[in-house]
Amino acid sequence: MTRIDETPLPGVGTRYAFETEEDRMLGVVHHHTGRRELFVGDPGDPDCVAVSMSLTEGEAHILADILGGSSLVQQVGDLGHHVEGLAIDWLVLEPDSPADGRTLGELQIRTRTGAYVVAIVRDGEPTPAPGPDDRIHGGDVLVVVGTAEGVAALDALIEPA
Figure 1 (tube, rainbow, N blue to C red):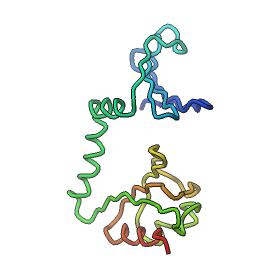
Figure 2: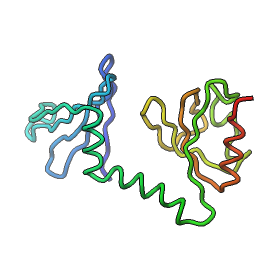
Figure 3: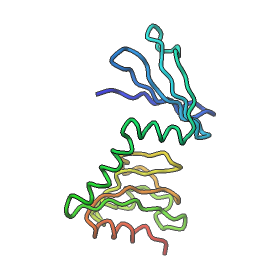
């Protein structure tokens, strides 16, 4: 499996890159401004950029569509319609929720509801497969999977008082 290198760039954003089968570095710099910079490394020197191109957030989404990213999201969404008993939902954590600022472990979500938080989306950036030490905050979107009853129980658990 290909390893993706994630490098924080203080004051800029985050650099994501991987090595292709042709020994080239291919990557994206996610700028804090929302701009995406696509780059291809020189095969002779992986630290040297051979080609670079800036993309707006909209252009990045179009490229993801072309590469099949949106179809994957659509397939996951459709899965809930095709697998009986499986519910997938995106729950927004309100700032006045009693869960605001608490970790998933503290909340004992799986134990109390039977549902799983499979990702946390914060400011448009996903954290897939969060662990018990991951803290959730108002404005986060929780991607949850479980039975319809479990998802409803989770929604009730994070609902403001």
